[in-house]
Image 1 (cartoon, helix red, strand yellow):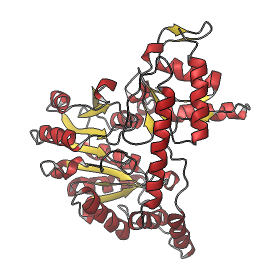
Image 2: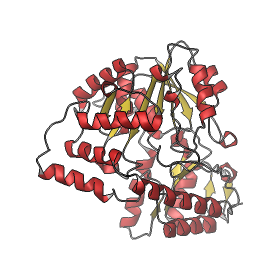
Image 3: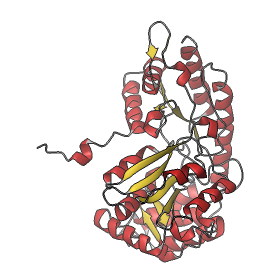
Length: 397
């Protein structure tokens, strides 16, 4: 019998963190690595948010906080849900956590027993399946390819639901694809879920403020499913607050209470001064976020234009987040005389080791024919990365 648990030995390493580690090692060897692998805005947290946190520290607001979040922040989140998303979550339906990832882990630990099923829209964020597995659940993967703009249809959802389904799970705007569900598409999915009273919805909306089409739509605003919708959000992407470790959820009251109970045994409340800063983020002007979004839109269009000129890369036109998710299956089996690309893992490893551009294999996201590119980098870096890719990939036949 081994010392380590089966839980951890069966868990996959995060592919995004693996590529980040490889990038660090190559940089230490003196190579000019351009890392397009991590999902982190390259902007700094706005000054007005940092000043509130500094003031909170100076005034001694550094003690333990309530497990589910300070009341001031929960009220601000409730107001945000009401005004921006048409989601009438009360203060006692909100739980603040140490990042949106913990919010999702709380949900899984609170709702899943051994063998329970979760319908997961694919491509999916890397940690979804691992957290579901850790909680004893089973992921039922429903996949949409580039021909569907990577968006699962309501018909696919209905076919995947069984008596064992606890909830369906998706993100919009989506990590890794950048795809955004329209109001019509969300309502069609809501209409399906409404037929199955035992099925809930978990909607990850962490990229809400980074989308380039119409206004953000929340599936829970459909009254048919609000009482069975859990909405996850946070501060890392929209406010460039990744290191502040702050996320939150709105849920039916009994689920929120269960998540609070789980969190109380793991980490208790999130950092005090981070929560004070988050109140400022929600209540102050969103101008810095809008400027960041505008910059991401320029970068998206730049990278789409440059990648579209590389033979073998098939790319769509995503409307959110800061990712592109090209289909690169044309390269499988191709060689440049020295290297052969058998799959997306090979593609990313060879690109990293030959031209020092960090990408992430789509296999980690449930789409082994794709790669994920983060354009959360400067325009200069993006141009240089695409130039290196074009020069290297142009020799494969």
